[in-house]
Length: 533
Image 1 (cartoon, helix red, strand yellow):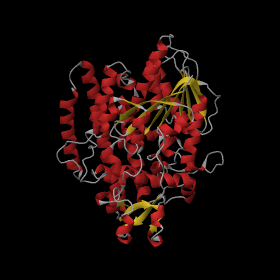
Image 2 (cartoon, one colour):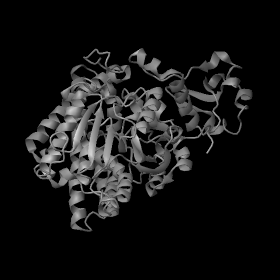
Image 3 (spheres, helix red, strand yellow):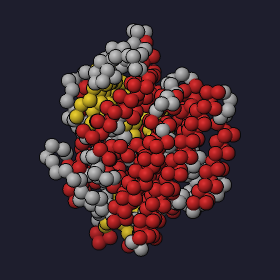
Image 4 (cartoon, helix red, strand yellow):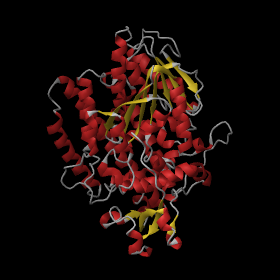
């Protein structure tokens, strides 16, 4: 499919726009589409050529990066163009990535399900802790009736575990919010604490109250239902840590320590958010790219401390009320299809199969890969030595609990290898891996680096190999969420708005891959690609 013609758009203040100017696109810039809320004012989009008629009213569309001008500078012309495209796409003036995907990929049934998925919970978007808990109970009741929780012992075990997980994350999230408010109260700034994005999220105001976007307390149940159906169909196994009762998550002392650490981190993170600027990373180094020295999410130490690595999983799972693992496990669906084809060669357990995970983080997802394909040679790539060590710890724990008698080579006999390096400069030979996997990285890369990383991932993939890209949904993927999707950039995510407008299918196709299949999983999308033989 040919790429749509790109038009340069300018943002103009609505009061200064004449009827003649709006008349330049009467079919698209009229009625509700003629006005779009941006920041605190009302502005409209108009072709830049027409905008020159009233130069005094033109507003430069630049990302709102209040911390570190070097981050804004790294967006460059490409990044600033993508930010402009976000508004044009929202108004239907340019094709959204979700629409482009429909032309480029085979669509799994999950795509149609999630694209227009909306809540049907009475009183959704209510405010306050009591109403939040009330909505949670309603969501639980609805989920129990819709998901068939007790149809088999397997289903009962799965749902008992995951309901407990979501309940714990909900309480933990509330506790974190209370810690933030308590800390702010000591400084006389409670109102500011409640107005943070985390406060808005936990008080059900992440999206406009008039919208019917899916309730955060219903969404986990739908995600779990999708996850369990894959398990029931044999696509992948039950979560290994669910069935390993010696796992640390069943240790009350470990759970208590983790909860206290999270509360402390949540308080520190939101205080930085209230200030509107993150702390500087403690490390000055020319060894790392400048974008990587940003403290994404306002988290303590960015990617550069043992504490950051140890609390990361808890923080992100709490934000998603426990469904992050289930979302990431959808990456196993295209991997299952690929491995089925290799099973005819005797490689069903991962024998003679090499996987590279780019930006592996804490290695949490790697344990699910290894549990399903224990003989697969797995290489973890990340820039942070602290996160690589956490990944080694997690994989070592999986090996100890699940395959203690099986020596698979690699580090600690787990069949895993650990490699420090950047996605845009992968220190691996060309055509060296059957599978390349990347989860939740691309939305944190500057646009130019994003393309270089994509080219590198294609380079190290073997002909006939599979590339799996898993990341945040984009514009057009979840239609009820489009208006508020860019708000995540307020969590010190300076490149997120450029990401949600990016045509990922075209990007990887330009480097020689063939688009394969698309999956949606709540707030996550999974794209698979094949490299021609």
